[in-house]
Length: 348
Image (cartoon, rainbow, N blue to C red):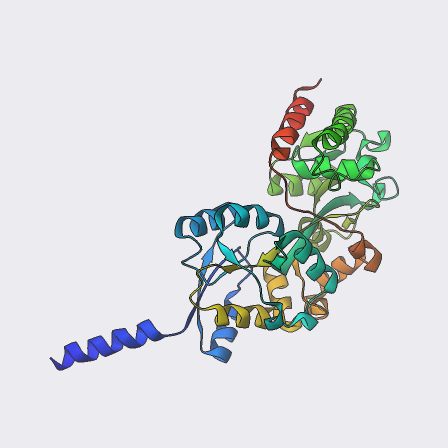
């Protein structure tokens, strides 16, 4: 009887232990950061690694239950919230915004606003731009420069929507402004399609995986590519002749956010985690683990030197302010884009 009583008491204590259930991306909750948070707050952290589609699926299945904090990308919140009601509005009075870069707070609020309420806080961000070898850096300064005859058969990019968007901006158009005008967007995509078809002879190969692209750049088969910043910084650490460049028309930016599931059991712990990990010295640990920078103001001061220096070489204040942040994608546009990409792929 005594052992049963002790067991019951032990179970009750475990059930009452405070816990933060976090669904996030790989690298966003490093073990040392989790351990420090648990030590300082007494809150246990249960981490589930995921991606946008999986987060949506899990939270949709439970009506927003099962997790206390999620980290969806900023352009994957409003449409999902409108359709499935799986998040609750963020209370910014509980966020230490002094630790956050104001431009990213604004960008995230703009893209996660629904009915006058905001559903996301900026967390980790990254961009697509150009990875170039120094031998062609004077030639390739924007996306469409990948079509310059001087780099024929030495370039690579993906046949994915970021390429369409990047080329549109480099051609002097604003595809994001046209998101809600299908005819205008179709016209923009038609011009981009023509440019990409004309550019096919310059392309060594359309890369499909990160390891493939890094290998092409390492061997010198490819001298310039459209790709993500973290890949460029990784190559720069190996070979200073290769670096990531923010294009003249603007790097394309994504932001992974913090979002509160609608049926969170421990909202207080969620806000504690947000404020904890966005402290500059803590945020730097996330950058060192993931290779991506965060919205934490001043965190680059504490990032490992080679990554910090590569970041600063790619992004001055002007380049940061010129980032084109992805807004939510209206229904139907990705189908249109897929048809454009199919025609580019099939063209001779």
